[in-house]
Image (cartoon, rainbow, N blue to C red; front, side, top):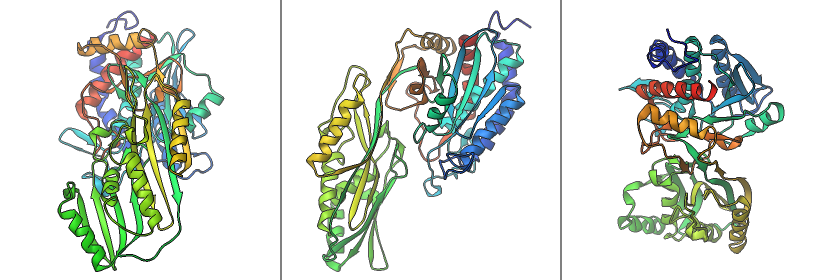
Length: 474
């Protein structure tokens, strides 16, 4: 057996990976069965009991591999593999997942199963599968006799999808790693991430109870970073009101996506779209946008609700690139997207949430001023505003150089770093980049119904993360 501290023994590593793979697969199935969507905060579980259970699961697994674990009061957990010298490499992953509804899935999101080589379950690719691939990669290296020069710290986050409260806690109590990566985007290496703004535009009006169509409610969306797969509008309707809608639908371009039903003297309009991550709206079909466009052609009461829908449709209902809000923009590396993700309208008020992602060389302050100008122009209220500056790391920095070399050695493919619209943990610390799990041009399943990771991909990720961890910590 060769000394792995002197050279990377690929046959030895491959043998250990294959020996451990059944445990890796079983561990992923068990982890996917934990519905770790953010829940009600309790003592010791600030993001809910399910998120805490997922963190505890990974800490227990890391304990079994002989790593030193720390529970950050339920906010976050991490496992250390101490190095021989100073310095620390971070691997930053998350265990919280976005919501998933059984009705949108062929396979139940929190009853994981393997079908035709695919491991189905919410979080399979975002980010539980890659997280476990990294953890097992360290276990493989450890069994092979590797002794890291720098401490390897694997961080298990619990609030990546909705606020980074886990990272705030970590920074208050622990020292940041010197550099590292997050396995939560794409290969070869992500050096740039667009700035992100989540904001809500609200308006109130007087109730009005007369008309052939009286709005009861409009609802769409499940989370602030998912393109909605469904939307629904409910009306109280007279015969003339029903005729207005049915006549419109006969000639409506998107009628195949729209279904009308009646229940208890109410007319219900359901729209079916296709969910995807809000950073890549072109890969989905936004049911919220479809219902906005449809309702903009319908006359209904209250007039305040009708006016609000018309305004929102003008601003964000007809494109995903901010042109309706006079924000369309791009730089040499990236372009702006502005996607409606949540909508709630009743008889006296309405709120729409927008996911806006702006170019990596632009500033949060600039777009914060633009958003407030839009709200003022249309007499709308910004009810919430959350913003993150973009990330841009130099292409010749550590760990970018090392990870690009690892990717090239593993795949033989071109090693040009990328810029994305997604927001990963990489922006949480200095000198961090996103590294995998998707290959270039690979269809993303994050935040989509029937999310999965293939068995072969889980195996291959373990290979490439083992090589990457070795390269950074040798």
